[in-house]
Image (cartoon, rainbow, N blue to C red; front, side):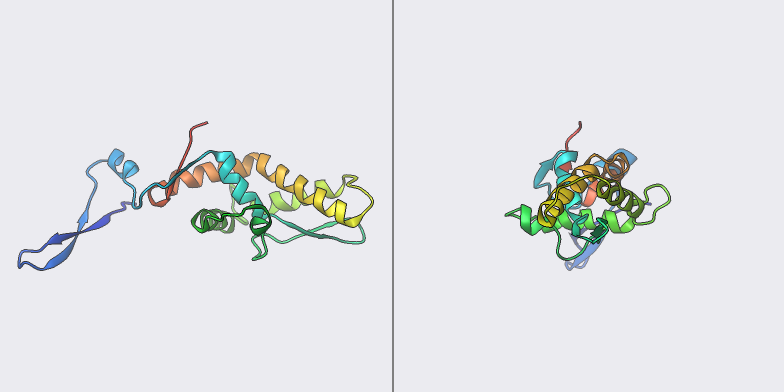
Amino acid sequence: MLLTTLLLNEGALGQNSFQPDIPSSSNQIEEQRWIAVTDTLSLDELLDVAIKFFPVLDIDENNHLIGQMCVSKTLHSQTDSTLDKRLESFCRGVIYSNLNGKEFDIYSEYVNTLTEVSKMNLGLAKEDRLLRAQGAVMMAMKLNNKLRQLFQQEYTKQKHMLHFLLKEE
């Protein structure tokens, strides 16, 4: 798929017209960015944003964790004083696009994580158990190899239109 940007050029009749700026090589296509880079992140920093879309909302009477992916009430407002909406949008889009993917089934990864964490003895008081469960699920998702691979792959596919660079690890 060839991606092009449009440049405003002076037309033959003195009027402005749009003409595509077509890259001449595959290297130029890979290097071409549609927007300016405003930040540089590590994969861990990117995943710090992504994992907050996997909240634990409650614990039922059978000690099962109740979660809902990508809900409007995410953990971002409780953990970050400054929110980068573009970064959140990228993360949310990657997760939604791969909920039940063939290569990356993020929904199953989340459900498996909730199931494993619910088996842990997280304490007696429900509030304490909920906080510990939230932390455990966030850490497990951050360390999840499939989620890490997915975000690395999606960054590579979309980097020409992202406002950040991902540091090499």
